[in-house]
Length: 465
Image 1 (tube, rainbow, N blue to C red):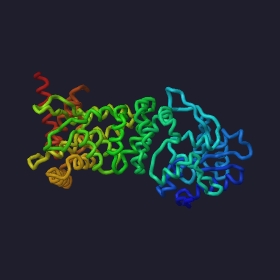
Image 2: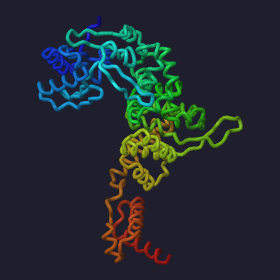
Image 3: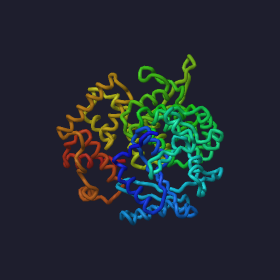
Image 4: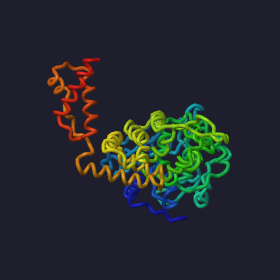
């Protein structure tokens, strides 16, 4: 049996758990993907500890909760977060979140992926899990790996993802369809092959993903996006008809041709290519996934091939709708939408741009200027656009060094405008401020006097109207 080495990051935590379990007559096991990662010497995450009370097995439903409270008292930890329905609790130990669970069976309602649970044996707990590679237990008393499916270690060595019960593969995915997305992610993360019966069951059950909450789908997508080649996962989702359920807007981009002078392949192929070449940043990767989402069919060429019409503003609006649907934060959505709206402009840059045009671009990008330029480079690849981006960045830096990039703070407040022109508050104040901002974009050094003169002329025009 392989000698398991606990990473230093978790060693003191596991030592505390092991010692406390021995002192209080508990059996403790590390369970799930953490054991798999230890076995393949991959950096493990999400430490789950299964606990059994040797003195009173009938009280096992509370074993994990009770054990976490003993740990809390022994090591003066913050109180655990308890989930009585599932017999679980969470503790923060040495800066890491650890979950304590009981061995359990699960009973699913057809319309929900949240099961009712019941105390079970270790074997029953192993078989209710998703894949054999995630159903291994590491017993802390002797550091022995327990493989109740008799297939987990073999599948890890063979690099195979297989459901714990091949005869009930469809049921496993229909009970909890999020497992389909997890299989796709683990295929990408681990480089493992999905076993044929498991893969076919995923395809049959894909439409069941509708019962999964948007937040859980979002979390899986986020994990996929930060992998080295996320396109592989999205292509697999498309193959098993899962993408049509989660992101039908992406499926629409397939076979949607675009001008060869800009990009190679249809819009979907281009999107996948940009996704892989974009720097590994969660927002940039999401921008890559969404930046062409607004392109759509408008006509057919003479040769019958489909072409498209689309615009960055339309893509930004559709991206906003999708991200709201998946429950992303307002800040995340704002950043993504801003970059999508502005990412085409660096490609359009030329030496003929006025300083005012550069300032307007910078103002439009706001805090996402660097992200916008960064993504433009990934979107347009290594061609003449690279030269344009370098020139644009130098132009921005030059204006910044001369204090000519950003307009100065508000020249005239609303109260100052009312006092100067002896007019009560009204819509005219915002009109005046907009006028001053336009003048500052043309000339950041404009004085108050020039601004007042311009507003005076503007107000006379209003009077004449």
